[in-house]
Image (cartoon, rainbow, N blue to C red; front, side, top):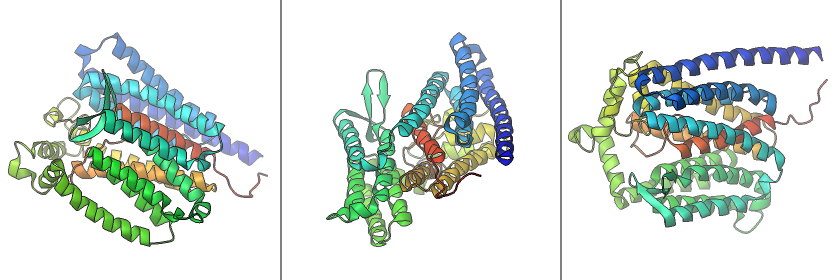
Amino acid sequence: MNKDLDLTLREDKYSNKSTFLLLIFTFLSLSLSLIFNIKNIGNTDFYTYLAILLVVVLSTSLVSKITKADNILVMIVNMLFSIGVSMIYRLNPSYGKRQLQFYLVGIALFFITFFILKAFKFWSKISIFYVIVSVGLFVATLVFGTYLGGAKNWIVIKNFSFQPSEFIKVPLAFFVASFYARYNEIVSKPFGRYYMEFVILMFIGFLFLQKDLGTALIFFGLMILSQFVYEKDRFFIVFNIISMILGSILAYFMFGHVRIRVATWLDPWSDINKKGYQITQALFATASGGLFGTGIGLGHPDYIPVAESDFIFSAITEEMGVFMGIAVILLFMILVYRAFKISLTQQDKFFSTLAFCIGVLFALQTFIILGGVLKVIPLTGVTLPFISQGGSSMLSGFILLGCLQYCATNIKYGDETND
């Protein structure tokens, strides 16, 4: 009993210190961006600034008390958000204000998601529901969607727009978790072994129709990695690798913007003023920042088209330095590591698989966009989670984070009992 009390006191002391350090980090990040835009700051900006500081502290403090699990997941995301919003605000104050508002909604969705998961216990039994929701969003995108950046993946309603494929990641993760939680039951049915394969390939087919190949790559990566971990039959992995190669070749010849991106990836310097302008400016920005950066407002990340979204990592490394870029990568590595650790610790098969899927989604999305920005792989139009400007990405990310927090809270330790 004394040991438990001692451990609780130590955890509270650690939590208080880490929350205080996070408050300082957020205060400095937001203050830098506000000071740079001091002439344009109004009362709304100032009150929003104070609200964000308050929400960062409260959300981090309340997580461990409400969920009965550690608050490191929210701390990591709050740090990523602070880095991202300070750069977004510096590049475009109007986008910065919107990002702050999306963050507030995202935190609310985080807690709502947690309590919804806690209130019901049937999540592993409704795989068909996840498919129906996903197909409904795909069909809505094809019917009402608008082409932006070469892909038909946005629905625009007057001044409001959202990207359904970002939200489809949530039912997709639940669907994969449901499949493997009830694996023996499903595979005993006719063609049950091919159930997940068929559904996800159907989703990827929808994404091909939308020309949203970045998200298609994330969905495919989740399928093949989950099969590598949970599937005994290695035929699926070989089949999917061959399908990926053939699909990539097909996409290259079908879509002109894919050919342009591949050509730009191979040699951006041959057409530096047109097709290669964006990636070369991003590489110049990354190199010119050095180890410690030029300082907020002293660089030229505004030379990079769409710097606040797809190329925000280059903007960060230019004005905050390569060390900050490394810090961003390490924060994502810790986030993914925590997701995998939760998956390994969790005894419930559904929540264990769900935590794994969420970790894979964060890892793949981060790798794809960073790889594209740094010219490791061809660029695809996905966002850097919790950092890039964009409401759909921010909100879906917080929903997935709420799911991951519940997976950590709902950990079961077999037949172990407390003393």
